[in-house]
Image (cartoon, rainbow, N blue to C red; front, side, top):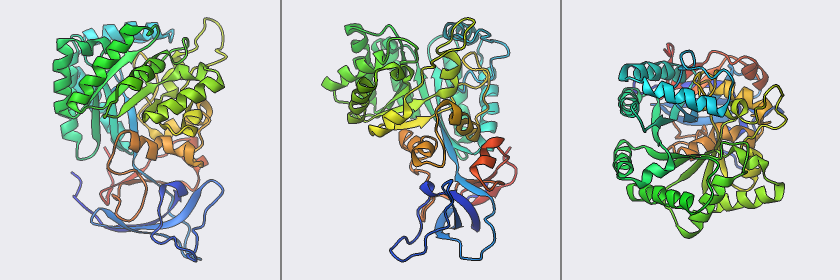
Length: 420
């Protein structure tokens, strides 16, 4: 049990883009900021809230490691995590993952999903995450026990980590009476409506299915989070259909497009036009480089020359809010992962060319993820913000990402010594 609130002071290296100083008027001494974007600061908190953020005075001792806000996971699958050992997808294909996922779903029990959820949340907690959005397979024999296990677990963990559930079904399901009932249940739980849109998805039928989903979400006040264009062909087929629907159908709830991988296969000019349309409709995107890098663009006996991945930088330049998620953890869709946001940032250096010492390289893991998940706090360390952070025993980004270190958690101003 964590004490409700705590007080304290700490000096640390903090990314400049994740901090607001108490007084940044003309003439105020600027903080010592290195080329890698880290600045030397002192943070003080009282009763669980930050009360002061100021530059270290000249001659002060070396900062005590690095400080980051507790981070977020905008796209996970807690219901199937750690199922790879029993349901592997050794060829690493999308079809193989789907087939193994189907077999796994038939065998789910409440106890199985509870064990997966608890194991996942222990890692989530220890690695410094404060919120997780999880998609839940919501059609078939394993659906009800998955929801029961995750909602029960979420209520037990709500004091430490917020869980956002998303109902994952074929989009067409939302046009049925069963879909209506599911939407009401999801709304009652505070969740989102989800769905899968992948090629082929052209024609009036696809647009009608999307209209049913969006109308239902609007009526219940639920956000929408789609698995869309997770493919290596028919570039942006699903997003283009969504744009056609939204052109004639205003929607008040937030819409997230997860994956959006095949957008990278568009010509540059077409991608720019589409990104601008997405920004106009306030579409958010979750890029998922690990699972997409593993599954998509795969060829027998050949190294893939092009791996479809959401075009993060192009979308950002157009004004689209883009977050990066870990997606699958040791399940048929991806054999690795462990819910560590620092490991995800490290992997994104190579896979997505995102570097955390640049504002747009760090925001998908911090402020943009918070905005996409509609969190009350954007993750910026400022006076009045929650004293929720993780302290790393390192002095640089290189040290933090070379081998993600153990971390000490600050939760509501209390140092959590035993994060298990």
